[in-house]
Length: 306
Image 1 (cartoon, rainbow, N blue to C red):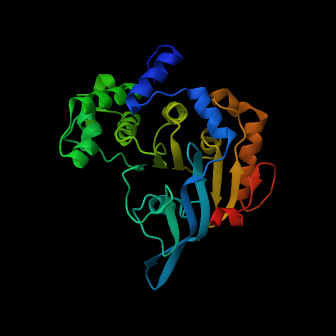
Image 2: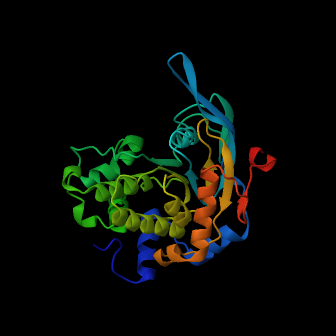
Image 3: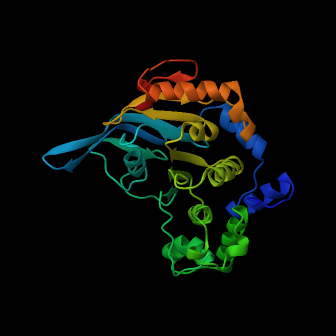
């Protein structure tokens, strides 16, 4: 099954540019993103969080600090229970930290923001609404109604994710991968500056997950989309990210910030190369507690708390 329209690369770029309402030059955008570090779009400083569960609190996060710059793709990795999803919800303004601060676009964040899109593990589509109606839902909630231009944008986004032929279908008629692509289109409908993904492809089969990763990279590159994504998969993190943040076991602490120095655009063939294996092993050692400070990894510094 083709995931993107079977047309030239430039035609695909134009489809995406129309869908997001801007005209961009993908290579130039990518080069600018790598050429000069920008002021972080998102900054988390000394984030700690505990939950009351019985007689003693469960400490989920302990003084986690890092930033995500505009156009970056950052993955959060760590053992189960290390607070990754909790941290993502704090970054979205959905959950307050016990201590520490979140800044988005230079301002304190304490509630959900229109410029932040969140894709949860569950697809949470409205079963009584068609695919097109689900994609348009954020516009209806925000504006109280939709315009013809909103319908055109929604159809472009469905074309982008290969579902324009399913605009009138209902969620129960779609596979798991197709439903997750509807969610991605719905999240992009309001042009978020920051996209937060909580292991969105974790329940999918390997081949579908691989195709969706390629699609996500296409959106990231052509839109210069800033992404912070939780995953349990080391290969997925290395394949997608510019940086991988590694959290320790509970309570989650930042133990490594690994720069992924693989060239873009990423290809499936890169997963069999030596550099890909080196980076994957480096991250695996950090997760397993070996703490091997190899090339490309850096420990948290005072800069991360600024």
